[in-house]
Amino acid sequence: MTTIPTFGSVQVGDAIPSFETPPLSRLTLALYCGASGDHNPIHVDIDFVKAAGMPDVIAHGMLSMAWLARVLTNWVPQTALREYGVRFAAMTQVGERITCAGKVVEKFERAGERCVRLELSTTNADGQIKLAGDAVVALA
Image (cartoon, rainbow, N blue to C red; front, side, top):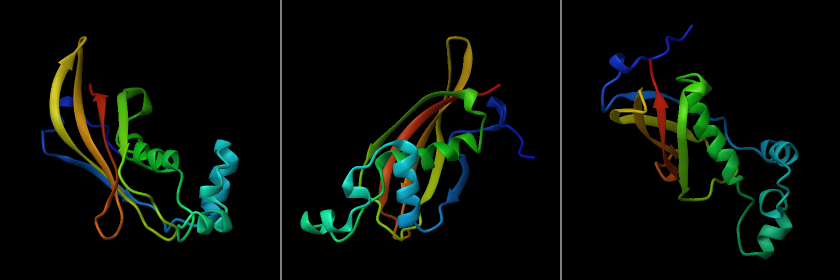
């Protein structure tokens, strides 16, 4: 069982536990299309993307954002999340393994809650940032 962090147990600069996805597969993209309702051909239709000058289909931005949110909910309960946002920096390609990571960059109190601000990112095996973001989490 994982121990839920407390405000006193974390310091600015601490990394939260990261994780790596399996290689992105076409099956994952097809399943995400069905689950999300996002059937944009850029994510599943190889003929469409080749006609557009791209080498292959790409991951949904919201799929990548969900992976990154999972690094948060692996660390704290979902009810502790107060803010979460990302900037899409690069396309995630079929076959890439994505590392989702975060670190504490600020501790503060707001509206009677003790909170930490986290800097978040997803990167591929070459270290290319795919998403950059931040989150605010309330800790006991």
